[in-house]
Length: 492
Image (cartoon, rainbow, N blue to C red; front, side, top):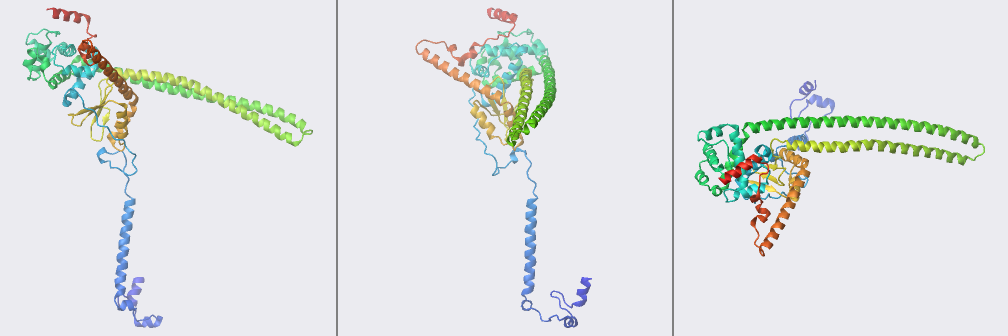
C-alpha cells in the first residue's frame, strides 16, 4: 500500500517530488534543499550507503573469526605450531653415537643380541652383555669363544629343524652336528645357501676375524631370521603367548577380587560405624535425660548461669563421643585397606615380572615428531634412538638425558603424546636400569685405571681388565655331554 501511495503522490524518484496540489494542500515546501541543488546530497547518501556496506562487511568478518572452530589436540606432530601460551619445553640432548660397530649395523647388533637373550634357554646359550657382543664382533681374533658359541647354537638349531639348511648340508654329506672345530665349514655352507658370497674364502681359510664387522653382523642377522622361522622357535612363541594370556587373565581376576573385597570391607566398616554412632547417640540421649532430670531438680535452687554450664557440658560430651567414633571407624577402614594394598602390590609386581619374562618380542616405546623410534631393552641400561630410515642410531645413557627427552616432548602431537605416556609408564624401570649401568661403567673405569697403574709396576695380564671380559666368556648353559664332545673335538 505504501509503494502505491508513493507512486501516486510523486512525479520523480531520487529525490521524490510531490505533486503540487498535494504540496499546497498539506503545506509541504516545494523548494529543494541547498545541498540537493549543489549535488552534494546524493553523494553523501551514496557515501553513507558505501560506509554502511563496509561496516557490515567488517562485522561479518569479525563474526566469521569468532565462529572459527578451535583446533582439537592431539593432531599430527608436523602440523603442531607453537603458540604463545604453550608450556616451555626442555631442550633435547643429542643422543650419543660412539658405537664400535658401524652406525648402519647397530640395528643388526641389537636384533642378534636380543634374540640370543630372549631364547637363550632354547639355544643353550648363557647370557652375555651387549658390550661383550659388540667387542667380540669388532675383535680380529678368529676363534673367540663367544662368537663360536653363538654361531654353533644357531646352526645347530637350523639343523635340528630339518629345513632348507639341513637339506643343503645333507647334499654335501655333512654330519648333523656342528662342533667348535667344524663351525666355520657349516658357516660357509650357510653363506653359500643365502647367497652371501663375499668373504666365503676368507672364512673357509680360517680367517673369520678378518671379515668386515658389517658383514659379520649381516651373517648373524640372516642366521637369526632363519632361526625365527624354525618350528622350535614358533612353538616357544606360542607357549609364551599362551602364558602371557593366562597371566593377564590372572592379573585381571586378582584386580576384580581385590576390588570386590575392598568394596565389601568398606560396606561392613560403614555399617559398623553407623551402628556405633546410633549406640553412642542412644547412650548420649540416656545420659542427657538423666542430666536434664537432675538439672531440673536443681534448677529451682541453682542460678540461671549454671544451666548454661550444664548445657555446654552435654554438648562437649556429644562432640567428644562423635570424634572418638569417627576416629575408630577411620582406623578400621584404613587397616584392612592397607593390608589389601600391600598384597595387591606384591601380586601385581610378581605378575608384571612374569609377563616381562614371557615377552614375545621387544617393541619400540614410540615415535617422536620426526618418526624416530625409541627402544628400551630391559637387560641394557640405555634408551636407543633409531632414525626413520633405520640408517642412524644413538642412545641416552643418563637420567638427566632421559628427563630432558621427556620434557621436550610436545603432547599436542599424536606421536609424542603416546611416546611420553610410555616413557612415563616405564620411567622407574628405565631410570633404574640407566643408573645401574652408569655405576657399572664407573666401576669398570676405576678397575681399568687400577689395572693400568699396576701394569706399570708388574706385567698384568690383559684379561684382568673388565673391557676384555668378552674374552673370558663361558657358556654355562651348554649341556654336559656337549661340553665333553667339544673337548674331544679339540683333542683331535
